Amino acid sequence: MESKKLLLGVALIALGFTSCKDEKEAQAEKAVDTYVVYVDSVEKVAIEDAQKNWDGIDAGYQLRMSEAEANLANLKDSIKAKERIDASRARYEVLRAKYAATNQVENVGQSQAPSSKQQLRNALFGEGKIGEDMSFAWVNADNIHGVYQDFIHTAENNKDSYTREDWDEIKLMYEALDSRKNTVEKEGLSKDDNKKIAALKFKFAPMIKVNRMGAKSEEMSEAKE
Image 1: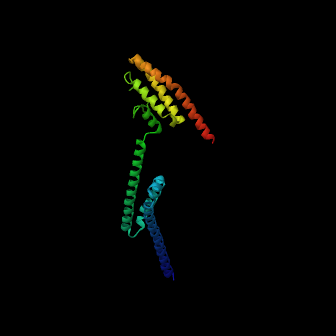
Image 2: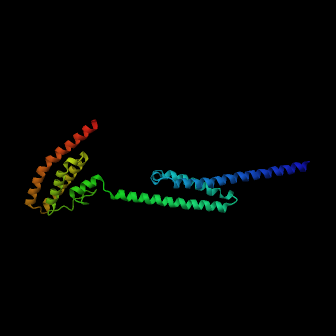
Image 3: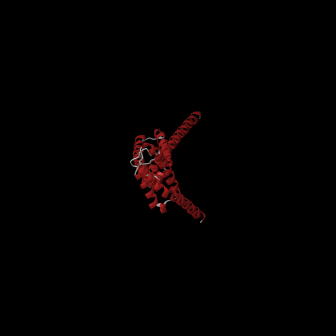
């Protein structure tokens, strides 16, 4: 009688081990399937949407990949499962590279496109002559009259299209150019060029003041509407 009970107990224990093993294998298969299906779903996401949510997508990928690899030991055919994981990993790396390349192209395009402020400076002084350092070291006694002419004539010709922010920038540049003129006067600026510059400034000073005030009033009127 006791031997029968012992055999029954052993059988139950063996059944328990088998059941536990089957459950672990089922969980392992599910983890691998979930990982593979996740990569499939990522491939179907539009590039624009993937770029917006890439951090979340990659975090989900890393979690599912870790779970799949951690469960390999619980599978009978772990070699086949490893091949499935590796294949999905390779596909995901292709996607990652594609999104990274797209981001790089966009970032390069953005870095190459000058800001509106820089575009204004280029129009007033010439392409790349004035950068963020606002250096006027290139302005000297030989070219300063021409610099004033180009600056003032450009501002006059485009005065109706400038915003208040544009006029603030123009005023800032104008004052910086005047500061450079004070230095150039000591470096051989001719009396003739000095007179011509004075005539340009006499005409431009009131224009910049009136247009800045007009642009500001216009923006305030639009804001009220």
